[in-house]
Amino acid sequence: MGVCGDAVAKTPNLDRLAQQSVRFTNAYCNNPVCAPSRASMMTGLYSHNLNDDMERPYGPRFATMPTRFGDAGYFTALIGKMHAVDAQLHGFQYQLEFNDWFQAIGPAAKLYADELGAPNSGAGQPQIKGLWRRGDPWKGHRTPDHRLGLVAVGRPSIMPEEEHFEEFVSSETVRFLETYAEQDKPFFLISSFLKPHDPFMPAQPFADMFNPEEMSLSPTWGKAHLDAMPKRVRYEIEHCPFTPELLHASEAKQRMAYYYGNLAQTDHCAGEVLRALSRLGLEGNTIVVYTSDHGEMLSDLGLWNKFQFYEGSCGVPLMFKLPGASPAVCNAPVSLVSLSSTLTDLCGIPDQGSHDGESFADLVRNPASTRDPGPVFAEFSLGNSAAKYMIRDGDWKYTYWVDDMPELYDLSSDPQELNNLALLPSHAAKVKDLKQKLFEWHTPPVWQGSPSSS
Image (cartoon, rainbow, N blue to C red):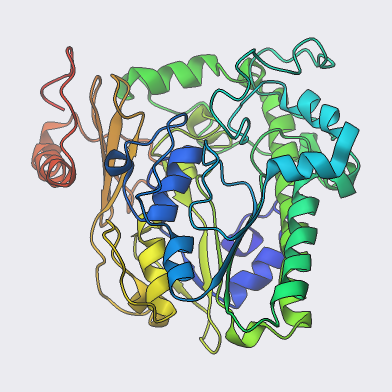
């Protein structure tokens, strides 16, 4: 965002929200991929306690944020993407998702199918595993765009702006607020956009805001020390399998321009929601939270997309706007697994059921507090030899790979994560300490070929 020092981003509405909020500069998701991250965020449980992945849903026995708020008398609603991978409502009493949008745009759904380019590229489709048992229903009906991999570099969208998913989410959110804000019940509402996630095809007015030739690649582009990186990371850097075109700087700058266009369109739609809260007189008694389920590497270290524990991928925005509270910045590392317990705490709802995340509501109320909320943990690709686990403890970040070399970064002196210290004898004690804390949190399964020293 612009307020965070990004000179390219055009995010006036989110910047304004940030200037009215308590903004956390070191917030992390718990699994840097869509569906598992959202499941963890919604339940307050880590993925290994949910047995959750991209294709296996978590069961109704797990209480969610809307479950807890609903039990406390709130009217609970979801408008937008949740990617729960099944048809469970998970505590929502009111729900509009992708299928409702498809109904709204009718034949224009084919335009979106063209842009998505695959049955499921992480953009939330299909919602129910196995729904397309006969294969991709759009196969043979798409207009090819000659992409080399699963995800296109990007281009201006051929869909009219008013038919984009973000416009549907913002307009339906405003309609919800106009219809239900005056009811006797308080409301709990998640308004969830797809962008800036791929497809990187913003509506034309937002694509026009950014000139690819004026984009600057990350200062770490081409500077990663490949011999000190796990082999899977090296492969991503050297081959860019999802979008091989991004190995070329000119194509990479195209991607960046369209990513920023996606972000600008999201900001515009978020502004519509925020203005409705003001117009309807709801600002005085409504908590507004802005966050994301994962980040985007956007050329950092030569990487793209998510899936990594580096800051660009695992780090997320997190802002709380509380009625009557003063805006501030908090640098304490915090985790989205604690979002559920934090929100119920802020709303005075008694703690209900078991969850892994502990409330950091005290930091929201008093961002200047010196209290250390403790280590932050994340995990990815559970249940196979590609699994990895991360701990952020103070300024240190340690990643354990079950089949490869470990990683250790000192974020105070190396915020760009260029220097892997894990293999240096001088840092053996720090590696041992962080590995012990990580394994006390969760002991990964042992895989044949796993390096015992990591």
